[in-house]
Image (cartoon, rainbow, N blue to C red; front, top):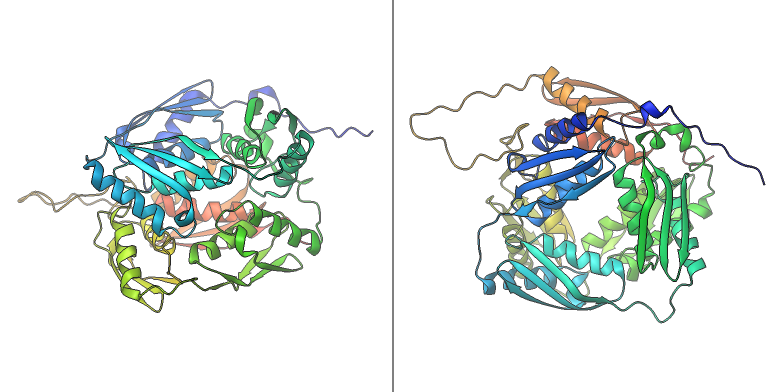
Length: 485
């Protein structure tokens, strides 16, 4: 058997100084929307990051962890952030939680019940898959006032046929091989008694977490990843070439359909997938807008996909009066941790939701639309929210007008400073630091040029520019690896 040798960089390049990692994460948290950076303390020891302090929601807590996981040189994250949120009566919080689950098209039919005590939601019941369980937790995190979720009694039933060890291993490898977000070239997978052991090397802590999740969704009862090491050099392009070998349109179409099997929102609709030279077209009918959007995102994460044309039609199974949909959208926005403090107006006509008002930044603008898209009966969202830019680069939201007699201090944000913030975010991104991305800024508009490895990298580079404070991003990055040969 031929042995493939993978290049290994000098040991000196395998580590980033702990102090540099800490400084980078603190800077990223400060310029990232959706986190309370001034309440979070960061410490790093041997590449393991510890987050302590407070944040105002479970969504914010998770987001802070995700930001740290994606930083170059981070080997893992210990999240000790506590939730500090105004207290709500147990009955009110339980009502919010129950409405959130009932108005979500996917979780509405799940056999799940919730009890609430002092901000802790104890959820019990039965779901069919590990991914359905994760979806329930995601919905609950999006409710303001929830400080903790106890899911010890939320069981995963699974199907009648349980995968064998060999089938679990093969399924993990298949998913990883087609997932554009991970480089599994240096990863080994072994399964015994449904316990999966992962070993080898990945390029970021975020990739490691993604691979662990894949193992659970493939049917693992337990995952041991102690021997799966993180070294930031493992993400470089030369090690990824094998993953991006030419794929036929038939192979790509099959892989896209397979990704739908792992998405609880999309699974039951079986969208039709057509591929021509790597360009994917989705057709068919789904019952909700969230399923349509998730199907497109699932397809974009498949190796070989060059672009996606989403022609899925949204046809709710039951007629919902526009007035009822509008009220459900307003309720969802009001209970959301990120946009609940804003006076967002909503109008609904024939299932099309129009959002008006003002929010602080691009992140909140997009998030509000995403919240509306997750409500049963919404077929389309027209996002007319204005971005005030009030949060600027600090990530802090000003509450109310300045004290009488005081004038707000001007906060200059020259283009060269914005460009430098964008470059720093790219340089500390485990997936972007080595790629050819050039940044120019004029009047707050960032233009990105150069070449990146994948469409996922292109999307991430644009997102980081918005996070740094760009008013608009003109993303002209090209993708170097052809999707179809």
